[in-house]
Image (cartoon, rainbow, N blue to C red; front, top):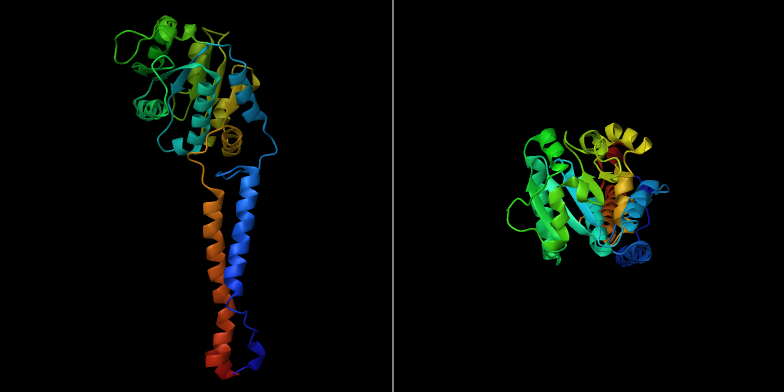
Amino acid sequence: MTEGRRRPALPGWTWPILLVGILAIAVLVEGAVAPGRLVVANPDTAAADALADAVTELPDGSLVLVGMDPDLGTYPEIRPAVRAALDALRARGAGIAVVSFTTEGRAVAAAEVARLRSLGATDDRLLDLGYVAGAEAGMVLSVTELAPAEGGDVPEPFAAARRGIAAFDMALIVGGVDIGPRTWVEQVGTRLPELPLAAIVPAVRHPEVAPYLRSGQLVALVGTARDGAAYAAAGTHADGLPSATGMLVGLVVALAVMLRAAWARPRHDADGGSPEGDEA
């Protein structure tokens, strides 16, 4: 047994006080920065600012077409930014029409349309155009003709939408699959060069889309996790972003348990003996 290995024990009451103190600091910091959100450090907010500016510059009563064709596997990465953009469009008073050119995108679009309706979006501000078959050919036809998936009359604010994509003031493209911003630039942008195109894509698609931003064919591109977090944090949307307090609670508790175990182990060896101590 080696008395030299004994460490002074911390009083038992210091552990809960230490834990509460760290959590209090975490809550205060979170409240000062962004309540309920985990903010990713992002000194470069150019991408988020460009998308915010594109929404802010829309004229009153504008119509925005959302091309919803994300990938189911990567959509959670961009969902906070997408929802923040949709919320910003609603706050701007824009009429939002949602269309998909892939079945995978349609599955996500249906969920997002349902969410917007649950938040109070009415038929005069939200139009579900559903799924348009034909991939690129269907997109080309949609330049001059669009109709709701369920048929019937189109609400008056969206009456011009029957003239196709050409009737909209901006298109927001949510990408992730093969049909995405690149397809829009090639098939729609070449036919409607005056239509502003903005895009939100997962990081895996960013390299193939970034050149269109540099060429000016996209007015805004949020294509990295950092830029998406910056845009979502700057907006009004918090759902889908992990809580900083929740993550810090788990982290601090885990660290406290590890420190407690690390502090107690040498004392146990000193008191009860260990193979190393016996050999000494």
